Image (cartoon, rainbow, N blue to C red):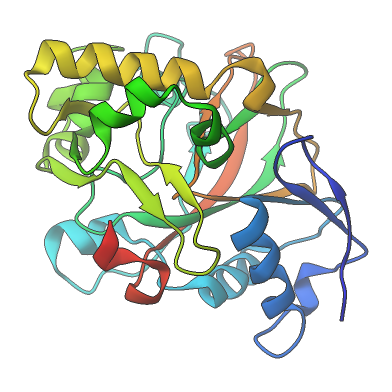
Length: 289
């Protein structure tokens, strides 16, 4: 079945219309959705009911659900849907200076989820639940598209090299105390290839993030300058899609070929997105990362 789509951005992404994600399963529409995901890096579905049960079932079609507590402790811990939220669970919101809110501000740096984990993420599947009156957009940038235009001199500096990633590095840019939190400090640095080749399409993308702090073969100062130049190049306006959330939106992006960031909103207002990351497996290119 050919899915009905229209462009999300002029250079990447698709809006998929007339699909009820409640009905998708391995034998119905998933293969078509996965093909769009591999080719276009980001997919938007609108006007979805998308219960938490459906969210989990749909995400499992892509692969193993990322359960950070289980990964960190190596114990069988029940998966719960992570919430990107400033709600405190008692009918109010965290103060703007609270570490919880500051952690959310860390998401406003251009990043790729889970590059600091021993198994990185394939995809993030996000459902809008509580939307503020203004702001709170999620922005995506295609590192696959940007790589085609990357100056050859910069490309040669990272070609064949690994990049080291640490979430403590990115969070310390927001507040030094964040880097001391157990959920942050428990993750030792990880290194991944600077260029990722999609095993389905054969296309290359830059694999980088705000968590990146050192490039193999360079000292940290030179590395950070080069990392900043690459991220700034990839996030030029012509490569960026900015999504204004509406309740019922479900947005999926390929973590192997995009950068993303959140945008500020009035922090006196609640904002909640349910976010499930799916881990990369060998068939998704894990052994080549």
